Image 1 (cartoon, rainbow, N blue to C red):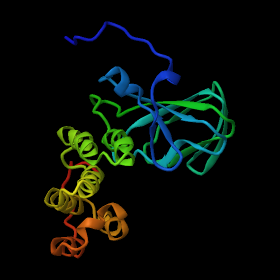
Image 2 (cartoon, rainbow, N blue to C red; image 1 turned 120 degrees about the vertical axis):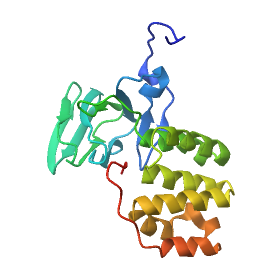
Image 3 (cartoon, rainbow, N blue to C red; image 1 turned 45 degrees about the horizontal axis):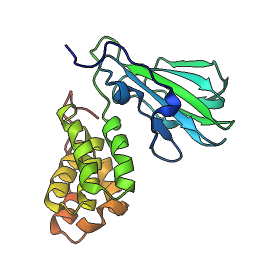
Image 4 (tube, helix red, strand yellow; image 1 turned 135 degrees about the vertical axis):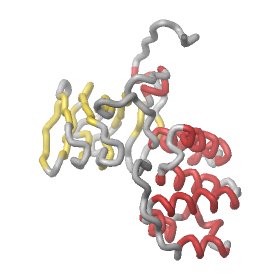
Length: 229
């Protein structure tokens, strides 16, 4: 039984935003309440043209997603089709493989996102951990960023992008051995990490290490069935 109150409420505008990729500003609704049954988050754009849904698919985790425009006005691009979405619009994406993104067309646009994999218990998405670490990384609080990202390994021990982001933060923190270990594991799981690592400025401290060059020349192993992408 949780020791938290039986119910809580909050104005979403009062929840501190966390910077995401590009111009995305993440309102971590699930983390704020400690929700464990389903994924739910919100995104806020202060200006027109800013992202309210990052360009992505859900192919690696199989999530269905529902987006609801709570305020303002957005334009979604889903599977190559443009959707005009004023406040009150709901956009449901049944196929996880469909690419989706959205941008605000008015200032102060807010979009709520709810997602989960049909037929399976909810598991916190890996991206939440590196998103949550981003404000620490930008503040150069690298050890704190490492701590936040590393917490995700308990949920996703074989997630290549999580391991790669952990390696980046460890490199920035000067934790070279740990960074090389986690980078190596990420490369084993996903060969795309090799190309990312070649030019990633976060890994600059590793470039003089002989192991770094060996990792980037390593032939990737096939991903084992059932491992997270």
